[in-house]
Amino acid sequence: MEGMLFHAFVYLAAAVVAVPVAHRLGLGSVLGYLIAGILIGPVLGLVGAETKDIQQVAEFGVVLMLFLVGLELEPKLLWQMRGRLLGLGGLQVGLTALAIAALAFSLGLYWGLGLAVGLVFAMSSTAIVIQTLSEKGLTKTEGGRASFAVLLFQDISVIAVLALIPFLAQPEPLALAAWLSAAAGDNSAAQGAAGLVAGLPNWGYALVVLGAVATVVLGGHYLSRPLFRYIAESRLREVFTASALLLVVGTALLMTLVGLSPALGTFLAGVILATSEFRHELRSDIEPFKGILMGIFFITVGAGIDLPLLFGDFATLLGLTLGVMGLKALVLLALARLFRLRAGDRWLFALSLAQAGEFGFVLLGFCVQNGVVPTGLARTLSLVVALSMLLTPALFILYDRLIAPRLRNGKGPAPDTIEEEGTVVIAGIGRFGQIVNRLLVAAGIETVVLDHRADQIDLLRKLGIKSYYGDASRPDLLHAAGLARARLFIVAIDDRDRAVEMVDYCRRTYPQVRILARAYDVGHLYLLKQAGADLAVREVFDTSLGLGAAALRELGMHPYKVERMTRAFRRHEAAGLAGMYDLWDQDPDIARNLALQARIREHVGTLQDALNSDRMQLHDRTERGWTPPSRGFSREPD
Image 1 (cartoon, helix red, strand yellow):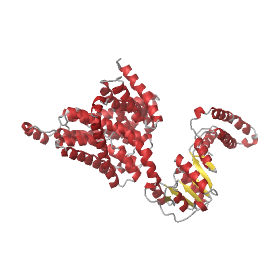
Image 2 (cartoon, rainbow, N blue to C red):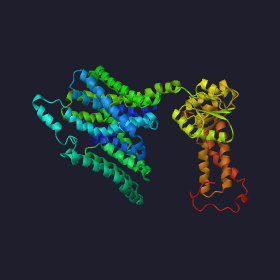
Image 3 (spheres, rainbow, N blue to C red):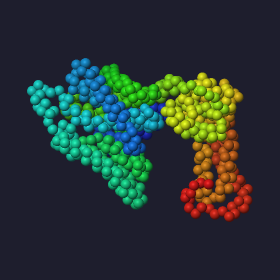
Image 4 (cartoon, rainbow, N blue to C red):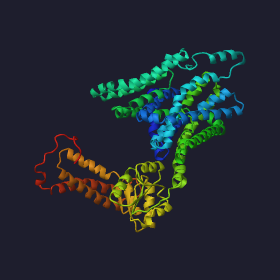
């Protein structure tokens, strides 16, 4: 069966089936998409030659992704990245390309062919890396930021690589003069480009490129805001969505016409709009298109793997793939050490960028067109690119399950020497622990604060908040902090498993110390209670209850009533949690615990009765002389 509807059904069905399974197995969505592509392509043969055409369309997902990334970066933040962008990114591309070229030259290959292959493999997969970092919440880490800087430089460098490739072809003896003439002639920067720059000299090409960039910057800053404001006034959501897509498509088209990377152009447009009041609306409109196109792109990568060629010489291809990834990882580790990334971020940086990327397919095709890489070798190298992309999710799993836990358990820098003891020991000084610590210190209580993030400790010391670097899950560090003589141990870290382990250790080793702990949700609260915590508090319960109370006041309810109802809600919640604890099972799958489901339904059903019963006890005089606010959400909560 053929046709657009059939292919759409096959791709979407593969994604719907494979991705949730991969996610439940802890493999991540990217690997799920790749596996889905292998199943519908080489294994079952449901898709065929149309995969390449679909891939060209799906690659627009990378363009949308870079636009959304740009929306999160203000120009001043991008300027702050300039050192890593140019230094780290430039060295990565240059050193990786030269290392692979030297290896190829040592094997007897022509130097131009070796350099071309090096440039192909120097590129990493923007799609896989940013998607996976975002899924795992690693984009804000130092390793994640460094990876993004390198990926951005790679996108910028693609146009320069496209300009260089035609001059890497091995000249025939009779055509040497013509080759030298072409190399010395004008229009070298515009080789391979089309549209507005075809046939232009170097200076003309430079002017057109600068004009295109200026159009994106000035148009994004001065024209887009009035346009979006005008469209927003129509209150037609679909028109706003169409205008957002028009902006991205138009920017990508302009960059393509001048021979630049469309992803780079849309990233620049996103950065310009990062300070716009329409930033969140743009993100919500474009995010669904980005997600589905990225998924289809990953499926096409898996579907495009040539299994007969792969299994025909599997050992050689796997060796080439692992060799390329190993060499890139060594270069990345050396650069991470040079730029002083910490151990955990160093490994994250190296493993996340060790693969070849989607631009490798484009560059290999361009190399074949210009006679730099033979067709047969290009097929083999394309398979190496695809195989390295397929192995990348496994590297992230390796980092999550083997490397990160070891680094967390004391392989990092030596902890600080704790010079004093306090009445309270606090583990974790993030946004939760900081508030607890400030309140205690303001009340004259001596505290000892521990945190395993050195950058956080340095920042707090600059702000005058005394704290110590060290992993609070280490028994020797807790002993040095004076936990045996403390009255309270407050666990405020955001790692759920480690928090339970710390509570359990403290209860067994220091039974006289009272333990207060931060819980993520009800299930985590029960685990902490089971481990021995005297009090566990859900991190968002009080703020959520406070916001609900503010909403009732804004809707016109008397503040006294709101206060009574809030207290009644708190009592009802505490009683319900205590009553459900006996039915709770450590297995988080509540869907199978029928008794607990029934108790939860009963608990939810009795809430309104509890609040109404408490509210009926109020006397009318509490509301005498009080006028509800005339406009909701117009003043600060009482």
